[in-house]
Length: 279
Ligand code: NAD
Image (cartoon, rainbow, N blue to C red; front, side):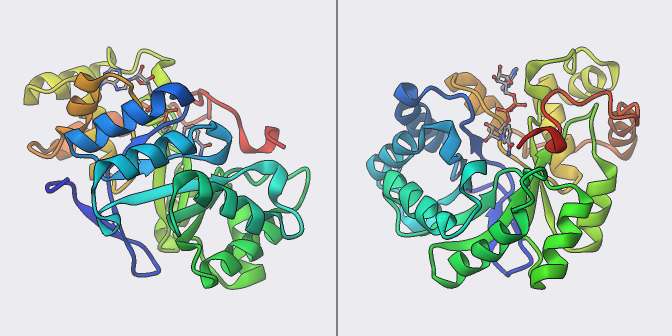
């Protein structure tokens, strides 16, 4: 991915700003889809234990012949494995499935606040990094109180927080906290998971038309220019190519501002689960 920019995380490691996410890619289809993604130039793959497709990701990596150092692989600790020494067992299982000695980024998938074990999970993540099982550690779906609590307990600031983020749901409280604390934001559902008329919205359609790009490309460009990391999902080769072809144009400040204004500001743009509801 020669022209994909990298960002530097707060631990000094670098991450390609655009990758390929494999949520809901069926296990039987994952090796093919990830192989195609690697063929067309992706070098950053975002999976999770709960997606059930780490073996397919691993098979594609093994078949690709791409040097390990040229790949950035993220996986995630599932919610039922925060307690005791379970995070150690879970990461080893993921590494086995992925065929890797270490991942580049390991995330606590959800804070599961009703169980109140996310501080323990974060303490274990710090151990996993020290043990060399992952190069960087971060969290996902953590709200500001969760972030403040894990940092207060450990003194370790996550490298990233991966959250639902797209034009109708921009989560400014979290992005402001992240900017102030040198935490990179990863936008999941960057295209709104196809659940609302994002591509027909005037700010998106007009920006796309002005640059001769598709609406999906305009939205991805908005994420990139906001400094967010993205990994849109598709199983169609032409869309994999399209989603990677976003480095030859730049949205203007006005175009960015118009997309910024798409969030109604009351949380109603959310398309998936709220972190307080996932336990
Ligand atoms: P997304 O916003 O990437 O939407 C994916 C859908 O958009 C696809 O199913 C496809 O129909 C459509 N699409 C993709 N490219 C397109 C294009 N060029 N033109 C038109 N339509 C296009 O949603 P997502 O898959 O949920 O999010 C991306 C990744 O984020 C996931 O694959 C996963 O890795 C991650 N994720 C993480 C969490 C979490 O809790 N941490 C939750 C959901 C997703």
